[in-house]
Length: 241
Length: 228
Image (cartoon, rainbow over all chains, first blue to last red):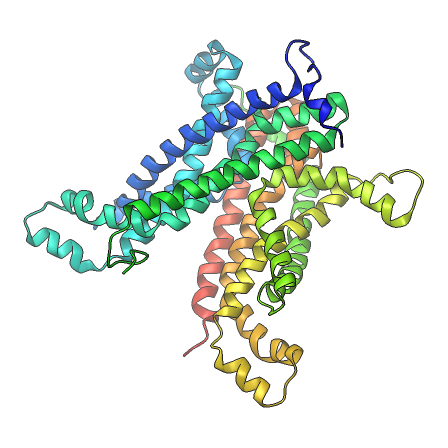
């Protein structure tokens, strides 16, 4: 174990290895952030759809969740990256015009965002179903529309209930960004492997990446815990006395 | 939709089936080993010895914080070194990725099975082990005859759901050039330039298998519940 290797020049001859890893981390965090936003908004929408009193809509929501949960993530990456452009010519024309890194970045966000949205939808549905039905009834009795009961009564409560499982989904999302390596996105894991392969210093490279992944997971965990404390409702689960 | 030729699948089917067989085999070994080792870890985590409990907790938290892909590569690099150290050989023996994956997945999944078994053990009312102790059973007997059978039965659906996740996670070993289901399909896809067809096929097969398995789990869930 010799940490000097991080200060040696990388293969491009310009920047040291720590800089290369940091560049990779930027992609990791960028993908994680955008995919999280996509997953949260889509997941909330599909979670709501699955609790609507319209069976065919609810079934569409169920199918969405089944589709993204029953195919391995790496296969989903290949489908987004290779299969879809291969099936639809206009898409192929569009992606070949893109810069390759841009193509990989957009694909990764889309793939991880939709993959994670299925998990979020599952949590949102569980959170909505955990609420007593009287909350909806009370909302309707006060003259709110069905949509307004979601917007002002049920979703705000459901999201508070499901913060703990959402935290572990968020941490999974951060870890899952490493699979973007499979389509060649130069994120942290890609850079780690590259450093190991070109310098034969696998231990240093992988130890650094392990520490970084643990630190960002912990940070995400702390942020979510702070959020949970900040939005808690007194008198409810975890709401204190 | 032009130039799609799905006959590549039938031509290369035996090879791809071999990959699928490896995937299933690895899944079964990792499930069995993971549940065994995970149960031991869960017992350690719940033990009254604070050192053992925190070592087990540290192991579980570490495995859960690191991406599986990183763990797979770690084990791939480390196992020859450890094997050399254990056997005292002159140079590290070469352990193929397809062999090291067995140990990797048993040790990694144990952390997840540990948490499931811990929940299962904690779901047993305290009065039961106390009653068993009062009858003169040893700790081992209490676990073997009273707590674990019920914990396993209570947690069976969750254990199986974790197995489905594991079945999907195995696909990551293809990045170490192992010929699992995805690895076999990738190799054919590159060789015959049939990337679209092969990956679409893999996605459909996984979808059908996993959907079928999760239906099975839902059916089991209703049947194995302990009537109270």
